[in-house]
Length: 66
Image 1 (tube, helix red, strand yellow):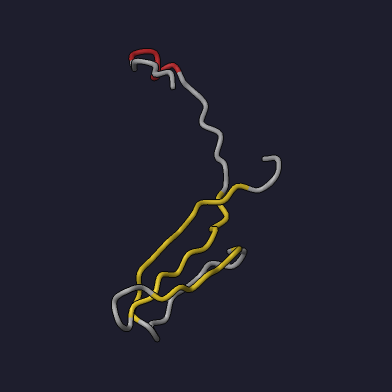
Image 2 (cartoon, rainbow, N blue to C red):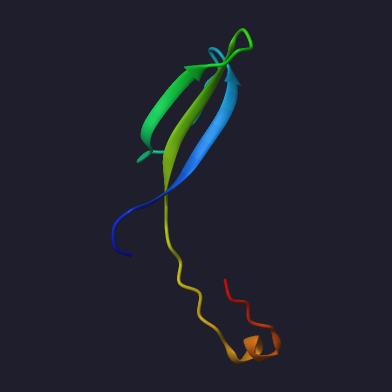
């Protein structure tokens, strides 16, 4: 894998709740919402790339192009 890949995580929580933010998370922000006592927690969570290789069993499956 070259470089770093991240996924955006955004959760709404009650003010004062505990949240497990993974180690390596970046750009953690906590913003109040319009609802009293509620906040939005947003952060970038590191992800890993996993290579998936085909096998002979895959010959019967249709292929998809993006």
